[in-house]
Every structure is written in C-alpha cells, then in structure tokens.
Length: 207
Image (cartoon, rainbow, N blue to C red; front, side, top):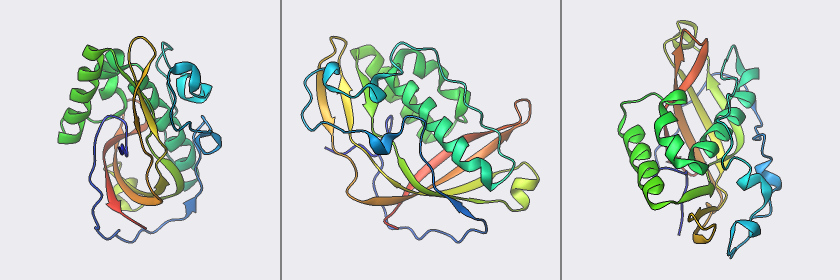
C-alpha cells in the first residue's frame, strides 16, 4: 500500500513544474527523517523508532512560520512537517487544530479533516509518511512582496507510514514512495501572526 502524505491520498500526475525565480536550499525536518530506520513489518508501537512516536499525547508544536526570504524556507518546512506529524499522531485534537496552520475551505482541507475524524472515531493514529524534502524553491515575486501568496516547489521522497490502533498494534503499513516526486504548494500570509500558512499542496509527478 502507498500513502504519499498523512491525512490525504493523492494520485501522482505528470504535470510540468513551472519555472521559479529563486535559490534552492536542502531541507530536513527536526525529526531527522532521513536517518530513521523504518521497519518493514512492525507489530506494535514498541517496534517503531522513537522519532515516529515522539508526538503522541504531546502538546501541539508551535513552529515559527515566518518567511522573509529563501533562507527561511528550510526552517519553515521543517516546522510545518513536524506540526503535521503531530496532527496525524493525535487525530482527535488534530481534526480540531488543522485550521491553525492550514487555510480552511479547500477540498484538500475537508478531505484531511474527514480522514482525521474517521481515525479518531476508530482509535487509530497515522505515524510517519509525509514528505522528506530534498530541495525547496520559493517564488519570491511581487505576490510575495504584496503578502498575497508564496508559491513553493519541493523535490521530496516519501517515507513509509504506519496505522496504529488504540491498543498500540500496527494495523497497516503503507509503503513509501518509489523514488522522488515534485510537490507544489501555495502559502497564504496571516497578517496578525506575521506568518505564512499552507493553503494547498499537490504532487505534480516525477522530477
């Protein structure tokens, strides 16, 4: 089974990535996902690395999502992905907090909310998965200067993910992505917070 991003299933298409106009930085999350040894057939939570279980039952992270230029993209993405991992590790709280760092109203937002609510009702948590960024590029054009929108493009791998029930048993293992994909995302500015919040992201295809 394959699960490109916790909280949503996406079909990989072959859309061409539009050119961007800024520098690229290499990104890693604060959980050091690239260094995790993902088990193939774990039975319980105890069989999973600590980095995948660290957010269970913990307070919601409060990442710094301010962006002033390309040098901030690495930190922004690392913090946002950690926050998303918390959302999926705590689906009951996550369903109510998804709007904190995602713009509500899109079909993607509604689908992720529904998935979280279903898991919360079933007593399931989703650990791992998501994206492991290899490079990240932002378009810092007039739309960014006007605080209208920031478009980012990420080349990423997709690590495996694990569905866990309320007894701590691994219910399902979702395979990681085979190779890398290109992901496009749109961020919106939140004036009161002076931060940029995810609106939508989309897997475009192979780089």
